[in-house]
Length: 155
Image (cartoon, rainbow, N blue to C red; front, side, top):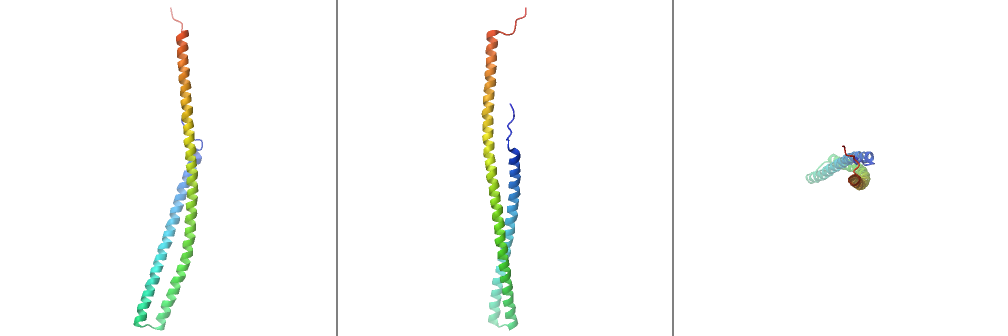
């Protein structure tokens, strides 16, 4: 009896390789997004810390130069936050794209796995039929041999 061979095994292996690659790409995209969000948190913290210090300095009295410095620093932090928001949106889009690519490949793999299972079941049915045929042929041969005694006796 011959061994089961999935007809699309090379395609299946290729899709598994693609899946692994897309999983790595998604992980990198998620890491980048997490890094950007962490930087955003840090900037928001700096902005709130700057506002707290500004308020404390205002209560104790400060020079116009100090007021301008706090104002400029606040504008600078807000500008960086705006740029970071754009980077975060882009990173979210990239992560979502990688996720959808991975989902598509996973669907293809699942389809190939179903096809492999169907082919394997067909293989098992064919093997069972082949075994039945061989068993039937053997039984037929044995019954013919008993009736006809095809082997001549030696004197």
